[in-house]
Image 1 (cartoon, rainbow, N blue to C red):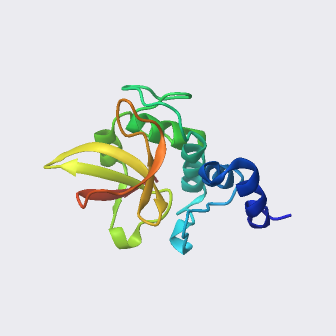
Image 2: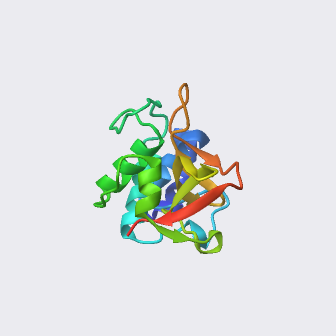
Length: 158
């Protein structure tokens, strides 16, 4: 049975809150209201996106790089490492290392960098539909959120 045919079963068995994580881990990048942009830019980006989604609910901890706690750049570093790609440690360093892409060319699995002035202060993994997987702040956890700012830039891991 295909992953998409299993979705109603998964929803009834796991609850709507867990269905996205199950779908992502199960091999389909299903995002509520998903469109073709929800398909990963490349195989490593798709794997990294699945890894990030699988960490849903993991607590935020400043400086943590997994496997059970993360800060924002720790989640992206961990996710891409599991996908076979190496990233530097901090959001700013990751920004400096990735290829700049326009918002119109962004694809699931690209990195989303939030900035103020010249400084990058946060990073997440684009999931499609203007949403990111990220580990936002103390007292929070890894989750899927809408992009809340217009002060973002996009980067693609090479």
